[in-house]
Amino acid sequence: MANLRSVQKAFEHEGIAAQIISRPEQVEMFDKIVLPGVGAFKDAVATLRSTALDQPILRHIRAGKPFLGICLGLQMLFEKGFEDGEHDGLGVFAGKCVRFDVDRTLGLKVPHMGWNQLDKITDSPLFRGLSGQPSVYFVHSYHVIPDDPAIIATTTDYGRPFISSIWRDNVVATQFHPEKSQKTGLKILQNFAQW
Image (cartoon, rainbow, N blue to C red):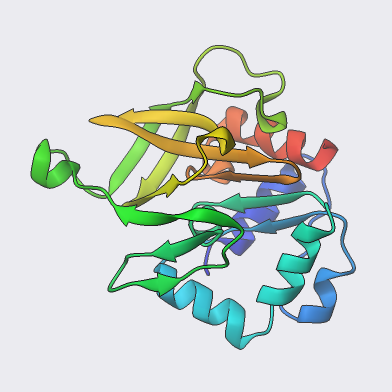
């Protein structure tokens, strides 16, 4: 769902070949997969299922191959999403994706949009070579709540901490947009490509 070309261009900027794929049989051709996305949880998951991309993506993950989810690509990894009702995600991780409540409780704007800092919880391979609290770019109204806190790689504060990236085994995913996060984001994409 959306932003495919911008992610591809970010990889290419770093000299990393990246191809946009649209057919299930193409998933098996690649060692690494990136699932970006902008839009609604329900529509994005429905698109993956209607194009029969969901099962090849899940097989890729189960095979232990590197996988990167970006924004909606992170959210869809969870069991449930609560945008315009309750909808099933891909179920890679137990947990849910819920709307920020900081507009009602703290008077902050939703969507959360703009630059914000990462607080590292684990030493995810995505952040190799990045020190301190790197700033990255966000555009989102929903955030994930995993059942297992061990998968949390970073949090970010927007009125209160929320999960801004996860990592378990061969799966990494970010709520922020590395492709829009300038040098820091390009370094993150390089790290994924070299992982």
